[in-house]
Length: 235
Ligand SMILES: Nc1ncnc2c1ncn2[C@@H]1O[C@H](COP(=O)(O)OP(=O)(O)OP(=O)(O)O)[C@@H](O)[C@H]1O
Image 1 (tube, helix red, strand yellow):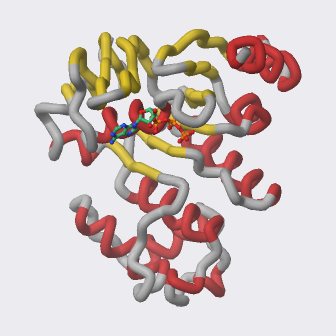
Image 2 (image 1 turned 135 degrees about the vertical axis):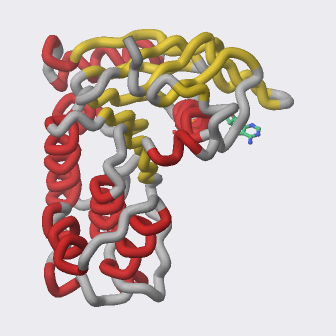
């Protein structure tokens, strides 16, 4: 079976820090995997290895069966990345950004189709023709989701996407992730938000000092139990 996202003995040693100590993980289509862990636990390193932004010291990361390190360009077609602050062109409108990023991914859409993607991602109609430099963080993330959907990404990698969002925006964002996962997109999200992880995740992993110390299906835990489990490992 080909997993959408897979890590095999994935390891990253920085000059004076072992950031990831041999990660093994498989994620299937439609899963929402939430990675919890303290600052410095290795969450961003894991995401950066899947993105091909950093090279592994040993082991390998795979996206849709392709080894990331040796297929840097090919894997880009399968994934969309939403960091804490989505990188868009501030002087272009939301619509123009979506048109640009979709065409870079090889998709040419009519304006009506682009508008439909933005509406589906929940961007208010009044914002569509406004420069992104004037957008809130939540609005930029909606454009990021619209880009992911428009390029038919199989996997969405997110690094602390809900930090700094107000509860309503955070809630809307969770709803979008749920919709994407129902359509078969695999979602891998690093977060500090235990409540969101429980709400939106199908599985949660707890990372400590570069090691994945526990993985649980969220259906078997309530938010309180998840918090207790997390605290147990952080002691
Ligand atoms: N480029 C780098 N060079 C050297 N050390 C690094 C580098 N990137 C990360 N590290 C170290 O690796 C460890 C893991 O960092 P990482 O950013 O992956 O953690 P994190 O779990 O994402 O933390 P946070 O929640 O603060 O984002 C930390 O000790 C960090 O200082």
